[in-house]
Image (cartoon, rainbow, N blue to C red; front, side):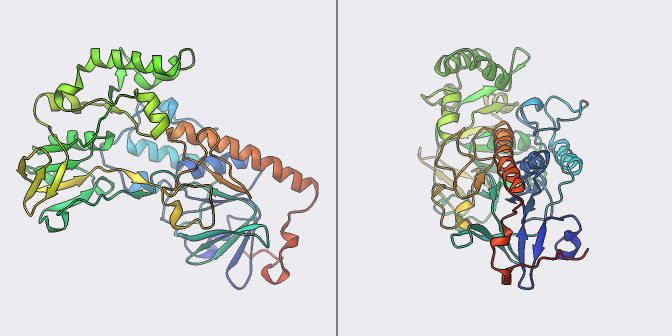
Length: 422
């Protein structure tokens, strides 16, 4: 899929010249994860062609290459569907990682979405002279009126700078490379991070006679995944339609304390801000418990305070304790990589997130759009994709009505009017 001619069979809306310059008549979408696929599908419904550039060799590469084996969706499937095509009816309430990947592949096939793989975007910049976006990969320069950033909030692993970690003689691995606890059998493992990934990794490690020590540096909201047979997230979504957010948060915490007990007593202190409000303001997701809490209560998962430093054979903690450790797993999350390749753009913060908060973060200026940066999971992605497609669809129809694709205004030396032969 990496060669140009092989892929051009699938793309009838691009022109190319001899200097590896590809003119794309529809939007360029960077990233073939759920965000990129959803936007491409919605654009197709608006009769707008698009081109997805993907740095890896497959769709949904985060899900395919950087997730652990036991992963399931944390929310019921109805909250994780992409626009225009739902999950198969026979999928369980919480689909597995492999089922979700299967859904993504079916989705791409259903809408005939064929990304251009192995195209890592090195630089994207708006050309003020032409009035178009120039998107450079290692092979080509792509030019389009529209650029859609779909690389998401989880593009790169966050690797914290922990004093002494370089001299640790055991294994250090980020959860993006963690598959199963089997390789850590009978070890003492330090898991740094207590979000959903950290909790689930600890739970997985317990299956292999591992003693996980989970570092809890900050406050954290833990909620049951379900309350009285209903999804906690579903209950929250229903309640916020009718009641003030702060009241809903108080009710959720009341029910959580009733179901789980006081988590402060086991070293998991709750933030002062409620779980939904905290998620909306900071993007910090509450942990939806799938069994780790009972293992903490039984002592199989040890909760420890922040790490002061890593030693050659273990770790020293801020409370003065020192423990022997065989391996370290970094459950420290992910970050956006937009600042590394999108140049001359003030729409994003230095952390690679849109400055405009949800629901207005999907549209910037000069034909720039973002999808999947809402901090609201796949529901936010679906909302962005629909909005972007409608907006570009209106522009596309206006251009079509004027019988002017706007590429006529590009300098002729940059244009090959004949399409590349199949």
